[in-house]
Length: 268
Ligand SMILES: Nc1ncnc2c1ncn2[C@@H]1O[C@H](COP(=O)(O)OP(=O)(O)O)[C@@H](O)[C@H]1O
Ligand SMILES: [Mg+2]
Image 1 (cartoon, rainbow, N blue to C red):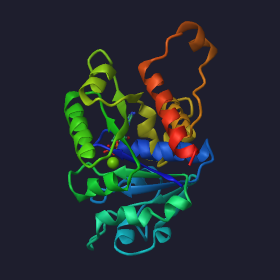
Image 2 (cartoon, rainbow, N blue to C red):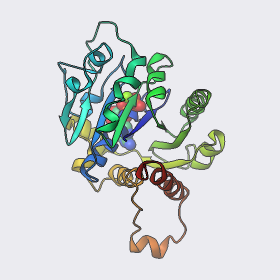
Image 3 (tube, rainbow, N blue to C red):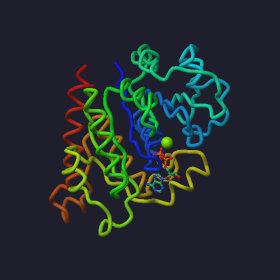
Image 4 (cartoon, rainbow, N blue to C red):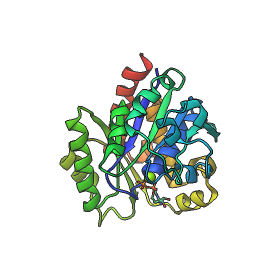
C-alpha cells in the first residue's frame, strides 16, 4: 500500500512545491520507487512549472470533477504527475481527493501532495487525504507562526505532523534556529535546507534541481530526505566521521523518522 505524503504550510513561498517536486523525483529516480505527484494547490497550481507540464489537457480539477485519475497522469522525469490547470473555471470538489486516490494507493509506493496555503477546503483536502504530513517553513517569525497554526489545525483533525523541513536558510545567526522551531511547535525538524541559486536556475529549466545538479547544497539535503523516506540509512563520509563525531539534531530526527517509516511502510 502506498503512503500519501502531504507537504503543507499556511504560508506561500516557503518551498512546498519545490520540495514536493524534488522529493518525488528523488524517490523515483534514485530509489526506483513508483511515485505519483499531485498538484493540490487548486486555486494557484504551479507544480507543472517545476515539472515541465504547461497547459495540461486534463488536470486535477477534472479529476475532482469526475474524470478518472489515470486520465490526468502525465509522466515526467520518471514521476507520474497530476498537474493543475490555471485556466480551470468549472466547479470542482476539493474534498474528493482522498477517495480519488484510494485505488492509486495499490499502484504507487508514494503519493506526494503539493498542498495549498489557503485556509479553506483546499488545504483540508490535502490534510484529509494524507497519511503523513510535513510542514515546510522558512526560518523567520512570520513563517514560524504559520507553522504553529498549521500544526494546530492538523492536530485538531487528528493528523500528526511527521516533521518540519526548514527551507531557504540564509544566515543561521539572524534567523530562527532549529531549537526554537522545535520548541515552539513540539515537532522535530528533519532538515535545514539553505537558499541555493540552483533552485531558481532549475525553475527556468523546468526540471527539479536534484536531477541535474546532484552536488548542489539543495540536492544534498534532498538526498538525505529521500534516503529517510525510502528507509535507507544515511551514510556519513569519512571526513564527517572523523571531524564531527556528534550527530546533528536534524540528523538524529531523520534517523528516528526513517525507523518509524520503516515500521509503518516497509513492514506493511
Ligand atoms: N532552497 C531554496 N533556495 C532558493 N530558492 C528556493 C528554495 N526553495 C524554494 N525556492 C524558491 O522560492 C520560491 C517559492 O517556492 P515554492 O516552492 O513555489 O513555494 P510554495 O509552494 O511554498 O509557495 C520559488 O521561486 C522557488 O524557486
Ligand atoms: Mg506552491
